Image (tube, rainbow, N blue to C red; front, side):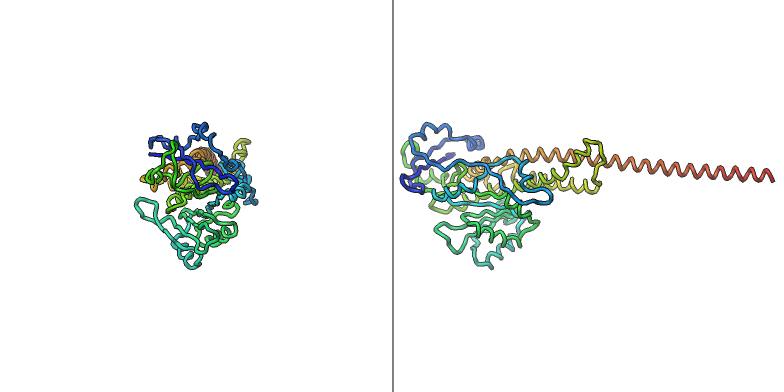
Length: 410
């Protein structure tokens, strides 16, 4: 299959990228090496890139979002222990807007959305039109994705929304005011909502722009429409590029799905770090030989929280495997895997599972310790009861002996 990577140049004297494609670099790769290929940088093209005037925006910078104090430990304290993932600095978007880019933002606000009620709410609100309500499962048992678009235009670019049943929403070309209004509107359809500081702290914003569909290959030959079908969208240097002609819904869904997966994983990472903070004092008690300040019921509840999180990560999500939706869509699968690689989802999932394993070991150690203490208390209670019974028997024996001595005297 052809995996196409585009490199565009900025037109001289203009602020927007030119709509003429200057070159396409592509390689023939086998499907079984796709995962490795999409993660490989374009260093092999460095010599060819020098012949073009390449002016791309500033590279990605890492940033951390300061958030409010929450339940004794601030979100910032939670984030400082996390596996670092790439994030755009908000100040960079001002420059990108001048280059012709739009923004796509993603939020995970709850464990689950009631999509049926949400769809009715959108129709009653009359601000957004529901275009698609479909299932990404091959069996089609449950519709888990809701796609809507704004009725009233603001500028030339459309504003699209993709809701995922697992509690995530991706907003294409939304400003801050409309984003806040939509997040407030969706609260009434949330099940087990997350706390607002965590929602903001785990959000993600990425730039995207449109490019023309016609292209020229490396050797200067025109590429046919059939050949360019795989290049309707691509991901490069932390930016989404979409073909300006035709329907881009599947490509938008693919990018949105990868972003939703990343922020959902980020929320679980934050939950795990809060769990670790809540258990940290127990390790100090064990180290100093103090009595464990937790009951057996509390340990059982903490263990349940841990296994529930492990279930969500490894069984109820697609973090360990590519979703079924992409099995017969190789081009979309390549895009999905490339964005997931950018967000380091595989590595972050592995790190989370390692942390969960350590937490499970700690919970089991504490549980065994408390069980041993409970058994020791039971043994002492039995010993005390036996001693009491022996004491009563001695008293009865002394009483009988005293009575016999009195009878012999009389």
